[in-house]
Amino acid sequence: KWWSAWEEFMFDTSLEIQTKKGMEQKAPYEMLQPIKKSKYPDITEDEEKVSLPLQTMCGAIFDAILVHIMNTVTSPDEWQGIKSNIVENLNKKKVPRTLEILESSIYIGSDIITLQEVSGSFIDQAKSRPSLDEAFHIIGPENMDSVRDQNSVIFLRKETFPDGASAEITSLVESSFEQGVTVPVAKGDILAITTTDRDGVPFVIASFHGDTNGLATKPVLTATMKAISSDSNLANHKLIFGLDANTYEKAKPGKQQDVMDFGKHYVSHGLSSCWGDVPDPQNYTTYNSRTYLQPQLNKACKKSDKRSNGDVNPKDFILFGKDDFEVDSLWKDNTGDKVYLEDTAFPTLSFPSDHGILATVLVAKSSATGDEL
Image (cartoon, rainbow, N blue to C red):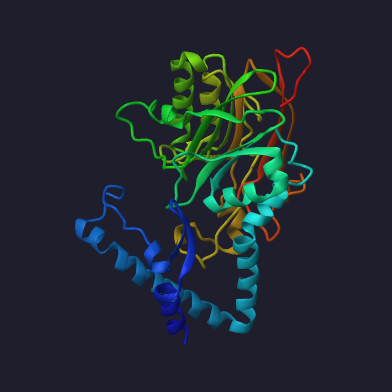
């Protein structure tokens, strides 16, 4: 019975999927992507050729194992209800709940919001919400990632930035990487734009999602600063950069980006952060761990080990010119209510993100009126 249902879903069920061409009907097997030797050099050419059927077979084996485990531990009547509740809140309702948080009284008044790993559907749904559409220019990258469907996005408050984005300079940033150095960024990870506020002050606003190990974070920041300095039209722009830097409290040398080292790096570029010039390595913005009921078993751990083996790290930053702004106030949030519960794993059924919200009020140093952003 289970196998027949799996086959029907995988090969015969048509799903409505957002693509570059708009909404399309696809069966799940049609959404699998070949594993390329160019990206994973350790695989052979023969393995690349059969990567699609291998993925399909492995997916079937893995799902069969999960079903067997759960049916051994408890009855389907019990575990399927729990799973349905998790899927409903963390998958089906993830976008609506995230948008509810953004349009709450806490965040609807923000001047700038930078988001990472955003789907095309999220952007469309945000623009369809009257409160968000009236308050913000909602800007996605010109070169959207429709395969992974993970994109960096920027919201600009219309009252503060009446004309929205004046130009996207993502390609200028990407062309500023050091020659001969491979930077692990994917399409959609970087979004950089220019804009001008209501007082005529020009800005570069950037949003970035770092790779899992954070190895692209320093090169991307360096490229952003190089792009700004290399273009005379950008020389007087003030930078606001919101990023998931994927930095670590206890990084593996050479394999992960250390948070303190990143602090020294942004200071070397004349920048500061919402955390100051020296970040606190124990000021965490993630706390998540994985069970064994998911495919990345190297990241799985027992419930009793979720704190020691989980991803509990200071990963998120808001950067700005040290001579341009100073921090007036700052908060973290992993509830949607402007409250951060330390030592609490998330996402939860009411907070669908695995990164906390990071918010700061900046005051312009050169402003005689103390204008806030």
